[in-house]
Structure formats: structure tokens, C-alpha cells
Length: 246
Image 1 (cartoon, rainbow, N blue to C red):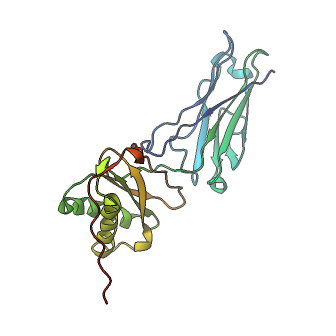
Image 2 (cartoon, rainbow, N blue to C red; image 1 turned 90 degrees about the vertical axis):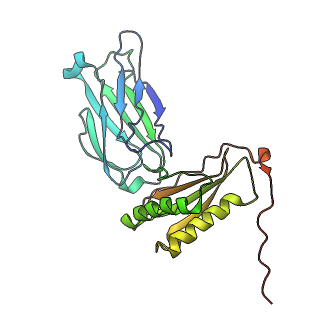
Image 3 (cartoon, one colour; image 1 turned 120 degrees about the vertical axis):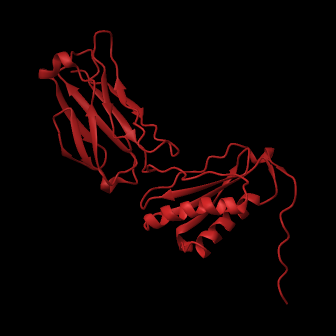
């Protein structure tokens, strides 16, 4: 059987909603050949779980004669080899890109019989728990109270406060907002300072603060600025630094 290896990357973006179905790898041959579509789990980032992969559009008319052979570039297959779906254990591969390939036998010689796709490094099913701009501190405290509850509910997770300056604003304004938020979470809500990281996200159209909850072992996503620093207009200098006491 002629084998053609078709690849399609799973587009699991850091900001994609948790549980969003993964894109499938697909191979389509000449006219008259069946399409082979392999689907991954809804959340490819949670590699500490046993994940299921399945061929969903195998050729129905050739079902009795079709064979399946699965391979992984990392991790192990713990069930289903030789069938149209497998269960995998990827716990030891959470920092690697993982290629999952299924070879379908029993097709005509001119039809592609293999499809693969790549799971990216373990970014995980994470997204900001909130996003707010230049709001009053009293309103911000209520948002941070909800954030603190999420951190307390998962004591193994880290909190990342990602701060974006606006296209127009004061120098260092976004960082000061996140430092203030962290101080509130530590001093008023009892969150350990070591669990909170302030991240400079660059610039967006408006000042933006994003509190993220990063599960243990998950690689945090990169910031997503939308404004080039060269286009930023600093309207005022930041507040003067306090003079050291003599």
C-alpha cells in the first residue's frame, strides 16, 4: 500500500476556550479515495490525563478489511492499538511536542493511508479569569476578591497578573496597577506572594489587567500585545519616586 504522510498542526491557542474541540488531522487522496480524519481530545494541553484519539471518518465500505496502526513520538498507548481509537498516557511528555500518527491499511494503492498531527508543548487549557481596564480601585477589589477565591480553591496553581499599557497613558502605569493588585491579594486576601507573578504584557489599545490562573505543571501562555511600543504616546511622567530617608 502506498503511504502518504499528511500533517496538520493542532491549533490550540493559549486563549482558546477550555474544552474547545481540537482541529483534526486529515488526509484526502484522489477522487474515489476515502477521506481519513483523526481527532484528538478536546483539550490537548492536559497531558497528565489519559487522552483518547479516534479516526472518525474511516472508510465505511471497507470497514471489514481496514487495519489501524497507531504510533506516538512520546508517551505510550495503553489501549486500542489495532482499532479506530486509542487511549494514551502522555504524563512523561508534558514538555514535548507530540506527533500522533495512524496508518490505515487495506486501501487501494493510490489512496493516502496515513494521517498525523502534532500536539504542541503543554500550554494547557488556561485563559484569563477576568479582564478589566482603568476602573476604580473599589471595583477592582471586587474583581480581585473573585480571583483570590479561585486561587484558594486550587492551592497548587500560580497566579499571573498580566498587565498591558494603553496606546496613550502614563509611563509605567500598567505595572503599577498590577503591583497594586498583587499587594491587595497578599495583604488583604492572604495569597502567598510567591504564588503571584506580575507580567509585563506590552501594550494594547487601552490599559488592561488580566488575572490568569495557571494550573501546576502547565506552561503559561505568552502575552498578546496589540500595539507597537513605537506607537505609544506617553502623556505624563509616572509619579515621583519617594526620596530615601536620611
